[in-house]
Amino acid sequence: MSNALHVTITDEPWAAADGATLRAAQRAELDARYGRDDHEPGTPPTAEDIAVFLVARDAQSGRPLGCGALRRLDDTSAEVKRMYVVTEARGTGVATALLRSLEHRAAAQGWRMLRLETGTEQPEAMRFYEREGYAPIDNFGPYAGSPISRCYERVL
Image: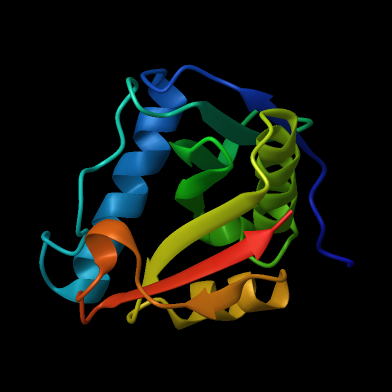
């Protein structure tokens, strides 16, 4: 990929400034896409329920480019939360690197399956997850019955 960026991906505290900035940018983008701010069924993730939070940075400048998290669902599975890549870094492999890092961390925790929710106004996210081996499933947990949710899972 000619436009690939060299990135480093590290664990960071949920409350760290760069992660908070990335999550705020994601929220603003989704609010604009959905035309409202109530587009997330269920309980938003917090420092108390996130097991892993990763930030991808440009390896040369240290600039934060994206983030992703894992929230434990049960002894064998977790949910991918807050996957986000800044607009200018999309299409460069950052999202794939983040997702693979999350999968590696999930496997290290003993989780054999990852689930996630995205939305109807995020067609590029749906294409991305399907391309990366995630299969569409019936909406689970707090997303059941949500007309704007699309859920996926992948066995690791």
